[in-house]
Length: 102
Image (cartoon, rainbow, N blue to C red; front, top):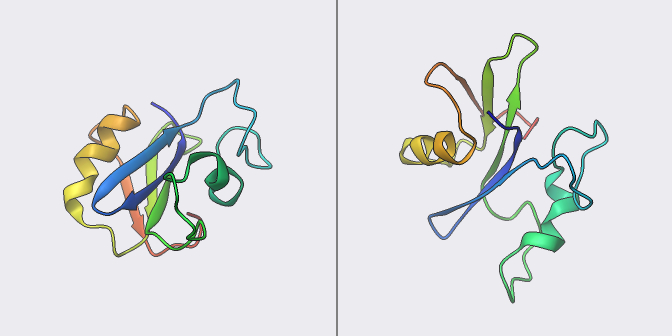
């Protein structure tokens, strides 16, 4: 199970599970990524859009060990299985739409 961030760009999931040795894009808390800080390092080649142009989300792990996906309400349910796979999430998770935590 991993924390991290993701974007949906042209109906493709762009996922970044957090790596403990990461040097770029790390959030203040130091245990996940920050979309804004990470964007310049990971945006598609030639993309001039800002980090918040595309629908995005984040995966957090609660203090009880339960995964929580925070994501833009424009992201369809068809991406849930992909997000679960990319972040190695279990079936019992919480999804929160439209919460600015992402």
